[in-house]
Image 1 (cartoon, one colour):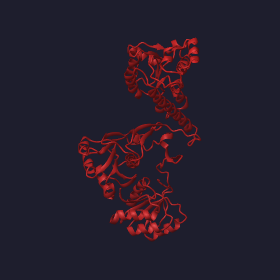
Image 2 (cartoon, rainbow, N blue to C red):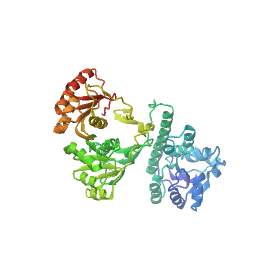
Image 3 (tube, one colour):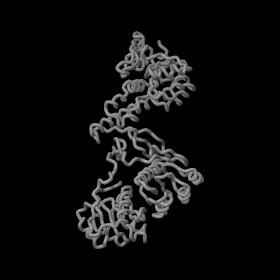
Image 4 (tube, one colour):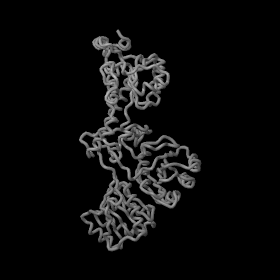
Length: 532
């Protein structure tokens, strides 16, 4: 009876037990940390079986290794495409604690493997823009097969597929003298998740190459960034994941500089804030509450932009999140610290800003790379996923390429230059406001926002109430068409002078006539921006 048969009883006869690692197979692309893990395995008495580059780095570290060629009797062939794909390797991994398996392995001179340490070719990181001839060479075959084989046979074999697991596995082996059944099963779950995610990114790559934006079988891969304190409410659990296929900078790339743990709702608000602030090239500040802007402005300086954004609705700004598209300087930091703010996201912070903000110990500060508005690529970054009971909805992100919409004046009076600049600003903001969305703006700042209303005239009235006298001489943006003239009448009473909207209502003529009666200028864009 071989050692591994004595380590755990036959399945079904008794609980599984800890296994001692006597033989480990190591074949890794990412070699970070592998020497330290291999040294701990060797100190515990394990034989190290290795492939090419892994063998060399372990030898250089003074460790004794057994090459995979000496196990299989074959060299690596086909430019390295075939190294581990051999019965001597896979039988050593897949053999069960079964007398029949033992007899077959012994008859073939195959010694079992107790631990497989593998990580895969970096397809996700390298194949975004690669042509198929290059991308296919980054598709791992042997590594995926090794992980799946070891994970399948977790009752007898451990599998480690990520350098991030090394420390925990090494500590477990040192403290337990081997791998417990609980550890092996947990590692198997991670292994199957890793191969599933890997295959999903490959499937997404070929779906894009063949123009299949929404394939019949959808597979999306995500890696956990962090747990959240809870979900939208304290009785709900929550976590934040990033899409593996995303190449463009996103909230998932943000680094927390200060503050307490981020909540689920913080992250939802920060995503909206970061997206809105990133729409502008000039200094911009967005204040978000409950996933919709309470104020948005651009200015000659960041402090000026923030002050104007705050002035839109200082009451709603309390407890909100702030996004800016420039490094936070001292004056801006001091202004933000003047009211209770949940979180700030920015490209970075000056030393003066950090000094001003550190007094607010719970204030969360995030530093994140600004997105390139011209880069909205691959399946992960071009679509958004919304959960519904029993499934998900998938759609293209609401990205309006510059010049794609056909602005046209539909009223006798055209907007003045000042009105046109304000209209374009308000139109961008409206895209980020919950529907039905109405934005009142003057210059480069919002003065009133009506969001999330079931009827458009109600949204106009809310924006007008928030703006008060500031609405007089302001412009208005609407994310969708006006079904009736009542919203235009309400806007006129508030003092609005120009309107931008998609058009497309069966009563467009009635709405245009109303605008003309009130002396308003009106633009149609031909593009709708619902945000649910």
